[in-house]
Image (cartoon, rainbow, N blue to C red; front, top):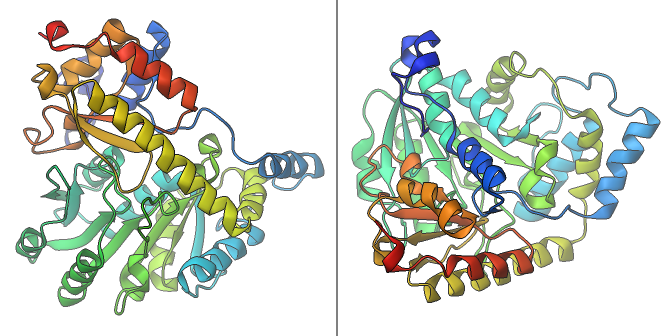
Length: 400
């Protein structure tokens, strides 16, 4: 999941069970982008801010003193209430904002708090591979065991038989991400139902990362796993305002779960950041009540950007796997003559002045992602066009 050699230098100071962790690939590639003046299509952040009204709400909260001191440990009431309204508005899900909603320092903290709360030493966590890198790191911190269900190109569908076969008496959690980072896969009705059936049959806890819930394309529909029969009391739903409102630096996320399960997450979360982002919580509360056309326009604009970058990458000779959601396109760079995605991404800033992310860091079974590369399209059109222009320097003749 990370790029450091666990035997090198400072790693010796880490507890033995953490020595597989190193510097996240996002830090490495973003630093490389800065050092080389490259266009950063690696890390998933937009290059424009979100709605002016939301930004001004944060300014107003600062000026009026809202949130300038510690907010409540579970998050400010207006945000928790807005999250509850959002779930009912979009999914018909009724949640209690006082006992079933917890505000976190982004979705990453919610993921960490959830895993640390429910995973004990030796517990197995089944997760869709490739993983967002914090999943593997936090499971390691909890001393749990990762059990991958590998998503294979070209469509990255969930192998239901493999999922069923992966469950053992040690299985504690299903960790699901849809829309899926990095592949862009969105669960089908059949896949959601199968996941529900496995979770209910084996009495498993489900951690459902849904941060890209509003970034779904081609008339597909995101449906929270918690809304399926038998799932409400066993599912921890995680999302955030960063991706939906293009304020990723604010780090306002949340977890939703049945009161007892949420209390377990709250127990660990309070010893991580305790609280964060007070003024921003009020701003995201208002953002969640934006009209429907905001959310529809967000998805349609990103779909257009997806198509722009996907067509350009295909024209350059890469095999392109168009995503069904998220910020990201996956390509195979093998047609260009490259045999290793990590080597490709490390060379790319010097060859073309562009940064991308290698898939292989998201896998335990790295051979599957060996030549796959992730590109972020959540950028201005002119930046995407300039990146494609620069990438014309990459031809089979430039490969090792």
